Image (cartoon, rainbow, N blue to C red):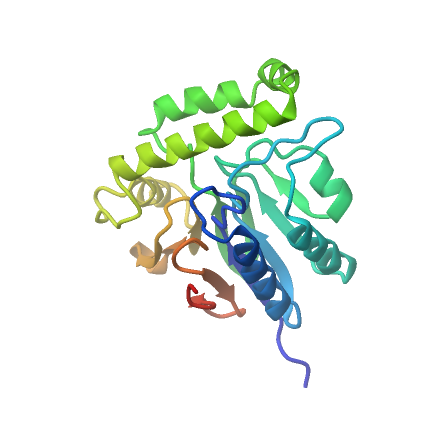
Amino acid sequence: MEQKKKIYFASDVHLGAPTIKNPQEHERRFVRWLDSVKHDASEIYLLGDIFDFWFEYRRAIPKGYSRFIGKLCELTDSGIPVHFFTGNHDIWVFDYLPTETGIQIYRKPLIREIDGKKFFLAHGDGLTRFEKSYNRLKAIFTNNIAQKLFRLIHPDCGVWFARLWSGKSREKNLKSYGSVFQGEDKEWLIVWAKEQLEVNHFDFFVFGHRHIAKVIDLKNNSKLIYLGDWVNHYSYGVWDGNTFNLEFFEHKN
C-alpha cells in the first residue's frame, strides 16, 4: 500500500544571518531536512524569514544559498509544490525565485482547506492591532518607489546596510519580548487568533515569526502552532491528514 503523503511546514531559517557561526553548515542542515522529507511530501510550506535578508536587483541577487536554491529546483521539478511566504526579513523577494525555482510566492496570509480542516497560514508579522509602528514601516518597505530607490544603491553597500538593519531589528525585538513564550494573554498572535474565532472557525493557525516551538489549544478544538525556528530549535510541522505535530531535526553542532 502506498504511504499516505504528508504536508510539511517550516519557518525562520534565517539563512545568511551574521549571528550564525557556520552559515554553510546551517544551510546544509536545512537542505538535509528538505532532502529527508521529499519521499513522502505532498506539499512543503516555508512560512517566512527563510533568508535573513534577500533583495533582488535587476541583474544581481545576494551571494550564496546555492545548495538551498538547487534543492528548491529539485523539489518542484519532481512535482512537489513548495509554498514560500515572505517574512519581515525576506520581504523583498520578487520574481527571480519563483521563475528560477518554480516555487509559489505568498505576500499575504493564506486560508486553505486541507483534508476537511481549515488552515490559516501566515508568517505572523503585521497581523495584529498591536503592530501599528511596524505596519507603517512595512508600508515603506513594500512601496514601489522605495524599492526602486534602494535598487540605485550598489549591491555591496545595499546588502551591507540591510544586514546591519536586520541585526539591529533583531536586537530590538529580543529586548522587547525575546523568543520566550509570554503567556496566552500577552502573545499578540494568540490574542488575535482568539478574536478571529469569534467570527470564523479555523482548525489550525500556523505561524512562524516568534521563534517559539509550541502548540496552543484554543476553543472549539482549534489550535495555534508556533513553528519555532532553525536557529535554535530546528523544528518543523507535519500534517499527516489527521493530526498536526511539531517535530525536531538534528541538534545543533
